[in-house]
Image (tube, rainbow, N blue to C red; front, top):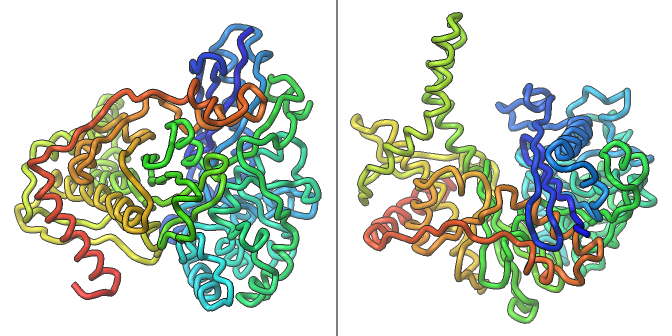
Length: 552
């Protein structure tokens, strides 16, 4: 009899569900649901870098996306599901009360953005992140030694402290903070109460300063030394973390009824989307997996013996078991990738959108919308025809700050070399190259710190949508790039972990051998452009040093 697992992938805009046959690895069906409140732009203020999501969006979307799967498959398919697991964006934490309920799900806070999930790209906590970095680096024990040495405004403790400073009512009602991936898992198992809540290794190690070297989290005194508002928070978090191949619990009857699944099936511990995507990409030592979407997340693994005592500088952490059990998972990434292209599209289409708001004729409206939809396609096509020269316009990719190397969300993007003859395709070309240069900087940091990177595998929407972007990356990185076949690689990784948690496989590696995605396409570097891109990359580095306050 066929057996299936379910992977749930919570992205920035939507949740995706993927149903996978554990015996063959075949992907039976997938479904996507956009978050309704988020789609309306509610609770967000982009001008202030504030991005919040309501927990009810997650709940409503989960029910809709799983129910939508059953409409695509034969009757009785749901009864053969043996396990499920979640991946989410991160760090995306929420404040919970003593009962483990997110504050936004209570009447007192249901419309308060500070009581909602603080999305990964919310950068309102830059000040707090700098304070945490300073405190850790001046402490007898550097609690950031395994997190690249720099704490980011995108991460858990900075966001919690910022909210506490902004909102006394939220502070008084908060018992602890929980990451999105851990809360979804606990919700399915009925273990959201802090007394029952166990957290996954992925989020705690990469964003919450958990490490085996200090038996869990830093002590309460470390956090109160930063600000007394954090007093007691760490004591309310269970320091016993678990890897994603382990069973977090069983699906409750309540949620089984809501989702149309069998009660009691295994629920694996959750993780961040990029880590699960790396699992689907069959990540191993020497292979860098890049999840390319609105931002990027770069994941690789290495053995404890190879890494030794090395603490890689300027990345998003190195954690034992955060990706593959018994391997050190290393994370890096860019705060904007597709988001940079979307920003440019919004800039060049501003007059078009103003015109659209004034039109009433449906035929004209359709025409303008088609122009909008094809804008990036046309820009890519034109940019692809341009020659690559050492004198080309050069740009930085820091439009949403810099995640790695060396996190700093206060920096901004810049463009140099613009002349009167510079047109939109040339500017777009510079932006695409900037994202490729930013990715190259990450790879070079890994290699310089002794982490082997021999090949690159990419997943995510951009890898399937733009030959131009992918070829530019291959040329800039001067290495082959493999693109995964699966359209839902992160959800596939979650389904693989669910298969191990449910007992269908004894190890993650055994499950990957059957269920991991094959490669569908490869991009090879153009050797004629490699040397020119080396020159342009040096210009990128010089521009970055200037913007970052260094010497040009």
